[in-house]
Image 1: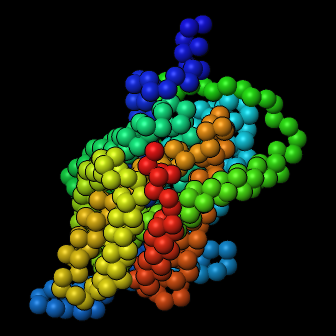
Image 2 (image 1 turned 180 degrees about the horizontal axis):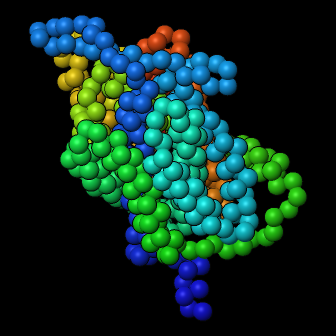
Length: 456
């Protein structure tokens, strides 16, 4: 009986509960790094590349360009990179449509942890399934699992994030949110190093097998380490029964939440800023490896090392932003991060594979991405948590559903625009330029936020 009471308690600032919560970042961030950012995009690019042709030579440096045939899907031909982007767009559309309903059910039944488990296992099993994605003829299978693993990852974050105000007081949420991201970066770096060793030590003919083995390890890591989180997080308290019309009522509730939150001028502008920088940041994060591979023709091993460096720098970046927020306030740190993202987009647009220094510009951009990526994510999550109306803290899953729906809608806009511009121009650099517009709008909105509202 004591164990049951302990599991269901909402004892805030409990060190064991907080550690268990942050440990889910350790568990699931390997998906974000291995599947989203590095090995799977590189593997996808290799499978969809038919050959290479020489396009430019400069000071003994030969530039090669991949020759890639379009992919036929549902009677229409697509560029491989745009199809990859569209598959992610579809996954976010599904998440946006599903999470408001599921969040309402979770708040009503006290079932946040159950839904967290469901999406965790969906994502982990999809990663394991990618082990059987063996050649280009299975492209539809690979893209399907890319969709379901993305649904699992982002769907689980809705319920994971909603635990933050339940387990920690406002004065500790910045620090704990940053600690979660740092745990995630550290865990994902460890697995990526293991994957690099497996791939680099394998013979060329066996390398595809070991690349796919990395997908298997990612799923096992995610589901396995999540068990520690599931064992410790509270189950939640049942607040009623699920009634008919819950789908319609869930979206009505979401609309009502938007109306309620937007009454607070500062919260409205913060959320609009969050929406705009999510368009750019998440899209760049999802497509960066394909950009380096197909626009700059960087070697796969170099790309993996770059992403690994980003993760290591991001650990420091999340800690730095959390520390600076405590000293100078959340608003100033967010302004700084968004400004750096605008600089990153500028780097991306001017990059040219024929420039002998293109590699170094890319490395500089990667370093800047690592510096601000973790910091802006952790700080925006904790800032929103602190700005929630105190009278409604019990409905945290529903409030974070709105936050996550905004983020996913932003990614839908970003990835669909990114894919469309690739189809239109055949060049990713114009897609990067479009992302800079989103960051500029984000900067304008965050300037309108009352600093006192987000520094308490």
